[in-house]
Length: 83
Image 1 (cartoon, helix red, strand yellow):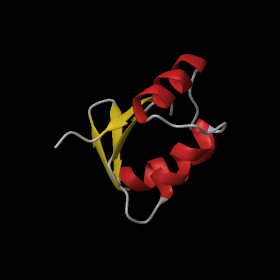
Image 2 (tube, helix red, strand yellow):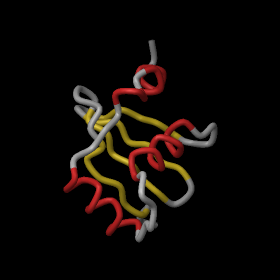
Image 3 (spheres, one colour):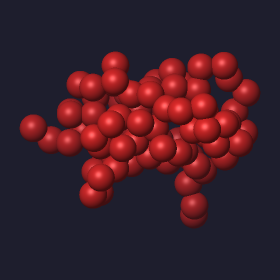
Image 4 (cartoon, one colour):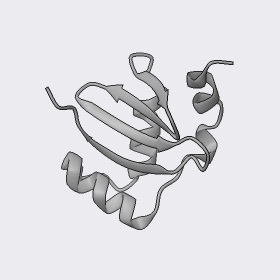
């Protein structure tokens, strides 16, 4: 099973901490109440590129990179893609 499918099959387990919510909102300048839902929608978008490197998945979509721990499904951070 490829890594992308593993993450997509476990989207119900994806979560983050309050510090994670604050960090993501700050890094992406988001003004949404449901940060986890926003990230999940980006991850499951058909245009997202998901790769696993070590203990994390990295989801690239639009101009964003979302980092998810591969074991706990915790969204660690998200940031704007560097050119």
